[in-house]
Each structure stands twice: as C-alpha cells, then as structure tokens.
Length: 188
Image (tube, rainbow, N blue to C red; front, side, top):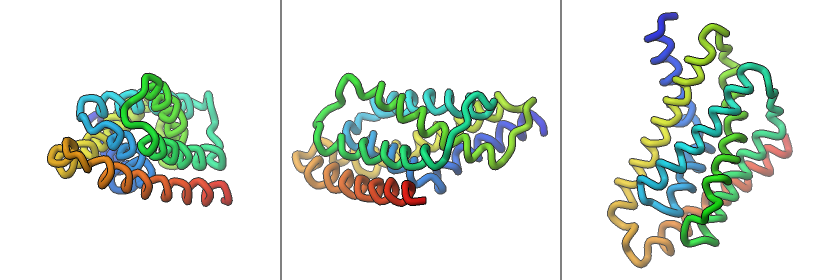
C-alpha cells in the first residue's frame, strides 16, 4: 500500500467511524458543544479528546494495553451520559472539564482500538495508520461542530431561551439515549 493510499484509506476510515457510523461519538461531541457553543472553545475540547484517544488507541494497537469491550463499551456510554448531565447542571465550563474530557478520550480510544483491530494494521504501517485514522476522526468532529454551530448556535445561542429550549431538551434526549446504551452494554 502506498503512502498516499494509506493516508487516504485511514483518514476516510477515521472519518466514517464517526460520520455516519459513530452515533455514540456524535452524541458525545454534541454534548461538549451544547455547554459552550463557542467554536474555538469546543474545538479545543475536541482536540484534547482526540489527543487522549490517540494515546490509548496507539497503546492498544501495539499491544501494551488490551481493552475489554465488556468494560469499555459501557464506560463510553456512561461518559456520554455524564457529559449530557453536566449540560443540565452547569451553565459554564468548569476548570476541570479538559481533564474530564481527556479521561473520557482515553476510554473512547480503547473503543476505537477495537475497530482498528478488526481491520488489522500491518506493523510497518502502524504509526501512519493511527495518525491518519485520528486525522479522519478529528475532521469528522470538526464537521459535526461546524454543522451544529452553523445550523443552530450561530443563530440562536445568544437568545434568552437558547438553554431552555435547545440545550436542556437536547441534553436530556442525549442523556436518555446514553443511559439506555449504558444499561444495554452492561447486559451484554
């Protein structure tokens, strides 16, 4: 596989792992967005998330950690639930948020590792494959953020009713879905 093929294949794989296949990832990113829809702030949060999941993805890919999907998958759903609940009880970003996002990123990275392990990465292409996969994930996250910003936040985030009519109901829906996923994944 040429470098260009590797780059495009794994970038596309990372992108499609989020859009359209990563419902849990999409809901997590939207939960981050809802608390503070300022694009610069939420892109920073998503980048911290990407850095964290890159670490555990890389460690899993080289076999230094072996994620147990029976533990990781419910934790991923639970992290979405916590992010959505945070939107309901806090009105601004707290100082510990980047640490929490980093921690959740470590967990989500172990979930990504399962997806990449199913594909199988040749050892000589390991670093490039992980790098381009993560670039694809980051591009998908930025796409989600831009869509949410330009479809909703740009027009309504300064309105008095924004939190009451958009942030709270959307966060409650995300929390309910995440709670269902948590229970479902625990039962499997």
